[in-house]
Length: 345
Image 1 (tube, rainbow, N blue to C red):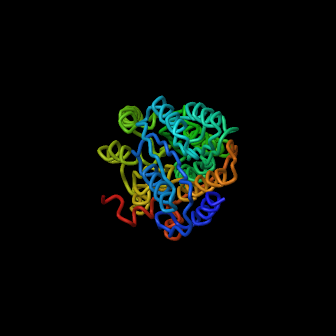
Image 2: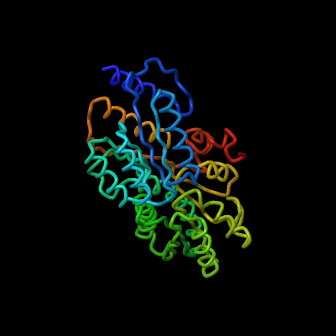
Image 3: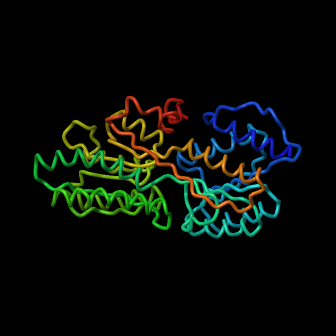
């Protein structure tokens, strides 16, 4: 009962803003141990998510065992099996892809250990706790903003807008949803305004900056008139800049030659670039809300003795745009990091 009481107290306290430690009022006699497996900390989103989860749990006296698989799904499976052998109370994972997540969830549930997947969902969401952003909706909101601007250009010039999408690794459900959201907007506008958009150019990134750079260089060299671009992750904005700037296409909004540019994640770089006028919009994953959902639901399952919880918890997301930046920027996790000097570190 003491263990359950301590966990329930932690659930209440986890509603506080991330990174603000709360006093531990009750300590459990039995140590609660959470295994946290992740693939890497390469991007700002994963750094902030890792920090929110580990610091908040430890502030409640919960032991966190961290395992970095360094983008190797087989290694992550081995690490999770090691956690299971140690008899942890619960598991949180950021998997490499949707396929490997399904295997890992199966192993955890076979061992009657509750497991939660943070932000990168399994291809089969029927098992485990899955916390994920609505990638289709968040993408549509961001791309809709630049599509409205593109419509004004098209009505003025009657010249087709040439769009380009940097696609993520398509074995990842997040990447699939973001691509779908992008094409939903393009197709919707072409139905309403035939000929407005040319055939979109798809550039593979595989969630890797070097791959994205090589492929984007080739695409822009072959199509120098691209004037509408969406990246499936904000972490590629520096890559985009390195390709556009030497060609005179890295231009702030309101000036001739500006490429309409949107992304998705809501990181500190996107916050900075929207403020400077180079990026028009980004779809925002509400990172702190997702971290809170993940931890609360897993701890509730442990407290209730629920060994195989199955539930999808959705973050609807929103778009931060040049239009709402002034009054909504503080809602974006990346702007909070930016204001704390994250990019100066």
